[in-house]
Image 1 (cartoon, rainbow over the protein chains, first blue to last red):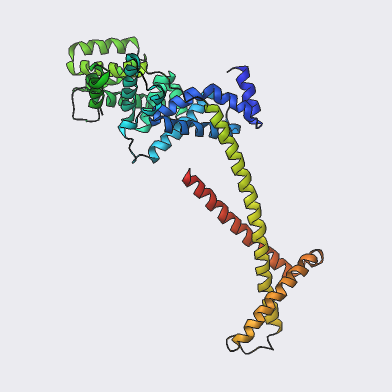
Image 2: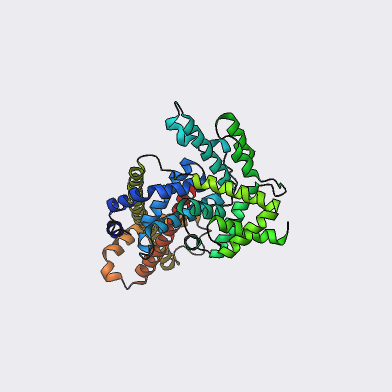
Length: 208
Length: 190
């Protein structure tokens, strides 16, 4: 942990909002990305990320300096997102709304590369949406934050063996599709389809 | 699918995380040679792994920190408004309760002292009791003010003690009820 960061944390603890603003600036990306991967839409992610920093600011006194500040933030964000998903379990996300608005800024002339990225992005989101909330958290922390089983377990308040089995089951679900009777691996079908234009879309829909 | 396949599939997940030891790794590779079902599973696991590994971190829209600071400021304003509201609520409630309690106690005193005048009962002399009530209310405001002014001298008086403690109790209860309701409704909206 940098000295600068420690200084900001100490000042923020005394109520210095500007110092806390520096911390927000520093960690907005990892926190936002976690919320985005968990919740699936930029709008929900913005809200959850803002709420995460608000909670961090309010409960800053309970932050244990021995831990890294970023894991503390990610822990708040994961728990908040898991709660959100459980609460809104019945309001299933409309598949079409996924990741559409986040690219709206660069809609005009789309180079092939962006279309490709966009389709991949959509595929990733659709994959993650199929997992239960706590599996999703483990997968996101593993893939985007490169955390060890041990770190993930501590962050989600559970055991290493629970994380191991969540990752194993999550991967199995992702590879197989939701239908337990289907014996044909679904993801391969999706990924071998060209991920651009109309045909790519039908490939993506195949796993939905 | 055999029980060996089951075990192998857990090893596959660990292999993607670079976790298993050399022995497990060797056993998995040997098993994959001879088991078509596991080979298929392994291929699709790897495809998913590749897709997830390749996905970049997504950044929030520009101005995230500024929006956060606006939220903080809004929260501060909200808290100040809530605090002022609670103090006002407590003051107004205390005043009203004090008047009400004084009225009741004054009415009680009057009834007790003037029992001889308007016996046998309130029911038979409805008009009388109304005027008595009016007198009591009028009295109570006077009594309340007098008691308030003579607080230092009256603190030991049962009238003052009962009125004051009842007032405090009712005010605290009311402010607490309204406060918790308010919090609950705000949480529900959030």
